[in-house]
Length: 382
Ligand SMILES: N[C@@H](CCC(=O)N[C@@H](CS)C(=O)NCC(=O)O)C(=O)O
Image 1: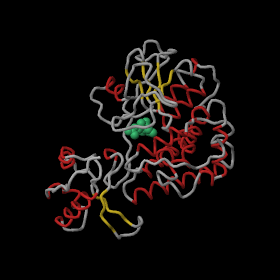
Image 2: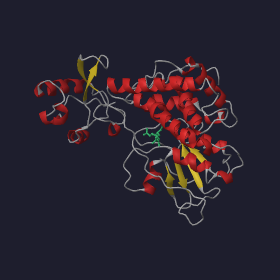
Image 3: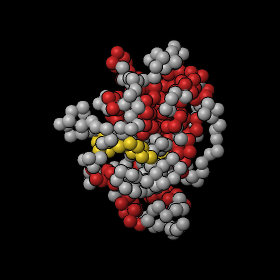
Image 4: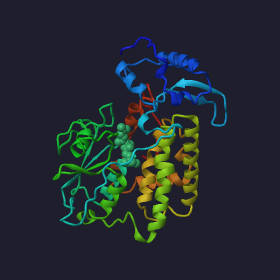
């Protein structure tokens, strides 16, 4: 590993809007920054060309104040790097990018993407909770022979998700892509955001139809439904409004809540997200004392949305994302819900803890720089 020597930063290096937020003299600040930053140059991720780019980017959060607690005003300035700088607010909150492709497969042969067996293909990661929900929907709707699926390597480097042969993942049999970014570029040559899974690919048009798991699950339950044999209804009409409310609540506080806690880059942003997360889990624990699933006896989309976060919680989010007020095993009703759903037909084969753990602990190198994957915990329900 290359260790760059100390860099003599010009005073202008420190962007002024950021400097004005610290109540210390600017000269003192640049001096402190220089020392902190140089002592953190331990790898080869930063080079001079990067530095000039960062110089022009006022959002580069090179120094963030660290507080003892959200309420305390004692502050030490330390250099940190958020995991996804482009998706970070000024206050250190993680703000997820919007899904880029939202076209629809329709039950209409004249539409741009008519429903048809074998025409569409799913690219997913078994590590990803968002992609996991689309795989579950595909299995529950018995669409395995109508919609193919390819799993990416759970270990992602700066080139993004890759197709490689390995345990539980493979090369791309449809397009021969090496990286998922090739699918994004084929659809939009100017695409310059984070390349994410899941992706629903149109094999005829050779473009991405949709990369939103919400949309893909709705399509599997809607226009794709006749291609499968299952009678499962993931979005029952008689609970539509309340279902949408509960799903939104789970998305904001739980599905995305764990990410908002884990990718926060200030103490305050982390505590806010974590407290909202556990308040939401407490609320659902109470709700599940009334019925085994969120809407009675049968799981609907909101239950699966919850499941995809709960199954990863004790193994990953509790440690890696610091969501450690309680574990799911400490919530009897949530744990029963998780175990019950896990044992339904078609579900265990969608859960791959090797992919889940290796993805999070190895890939988020700003959160876990040693990339050590913990040996536990023992999950007795598996
Ligand atoms: N479509 C989802 C997000 C999907 C997503 O973020 N997937 C993650 C995996 S869990 C991903 O592909 N990340 C790419 C990366 O980390 O660079 C949403 O908007 O809520």
